[in-house]
Image (cartoon, rainbow, N blue to C red):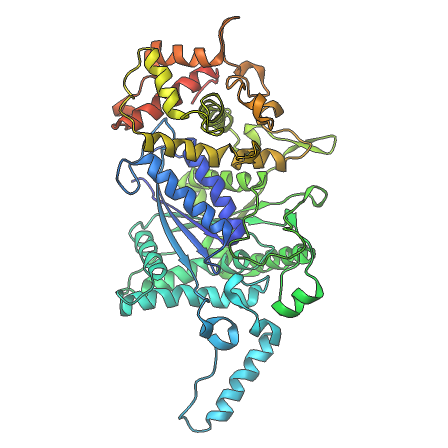
Length: 547
């Protein structure tokens, strides 16, 4: 029986790792899979959380025709079926904004109530600094992992309890968490991958308690059982890879407690030592992917002079290391079941080629032993993005993007896709903008995901040529979508007077092997067939050994 896949993204960094994971789904790395995704945070307004949730919503709109998530496909774009569940521990209420309020003693009416309440306060003071008890929890746990683990466990169990006691009165995010737990319980051999960092607060706090919190939450719902002996958990242990400006004196006074990037290394060490020693973590996680980035190559996420603790302004750019985390999830989900029967957690890592103090990334840097599958599939989407956004003007707003490409196909006597509506093609264009780039009204490039990854590599090398990441709009409008790889053997063939664009049209018109196969690819709608046809045709043009 096919194991169901579950992904949990925790905190701002976890959300950006999830963003890379969603793009892996979009390029076809998870053919035929149904994946349940839970976003988990304390900060309901977090910008990175909102961005990835919007991305998944758009993914599902591209994939479906009026349905919620569409269906799983194979050998095409958007081949995985994604189901999104959104949960956050709600600290927006004035009565729940800090630990003091959440844990306020309630011994009124009991004998010696004053003494009991004082004992409770003394106990809290023993474990938590007064400032830690008073800071606003709405923007996360601010590297206070001892507090965060307690509160995140409590938040998960509290949410399930609220749904069990009165589903109609429970908050929407509490109901969604309960649905995720029930879906997990329904798959006794499920695999769960957790995205989170170990240098901050929310991720480092939550990774250790997730298995037990989900198990205890499940037990509240008609005594459901989540068998942690059968459910396999894996996670990234992502250490510091960025920095930001330290808070000034005023910010420290206002915020009480605030995370500082100069403590991230110490935070990481403490978290890793705890994970290594804690028997619950060691027992219930099967594999940890230890991922780091050199101090000398860290980028700054500073936003002006103010330290952003969370909220809508925390919308940091994506980084190549987050793609490495997403590929760790791919590895975990594709492991043979027997390799996950270990009694204690296994730690793994990968090394990347380095030359002249710069990293050299190719497809096999991320996923080994599978030919160059990642480069192949990334290239298909990247070429399609250039075709729709630049050659057909979706980014520059001069033309209709994918709609114009369909008109081009009509001129090649491929009339199968003329029925696609403007809304359907616009949604495809919008996703490609998230993936690659857009152009604003000032004729400036607005970097999407893959452009941001390329920037984060710095002076190193990525899979594609630097010219594939053109930032001059005029040159971008004339870009060659068939000449993006560093390896020249993947350049598209064309005649002296022809173009890569013509080559694609010819392949789609004449190559029967590239036409959509309803049975093999599970594509049935006009939109599914259109995407499958482009996918296989670009794959053929790239001259890879497999797809």
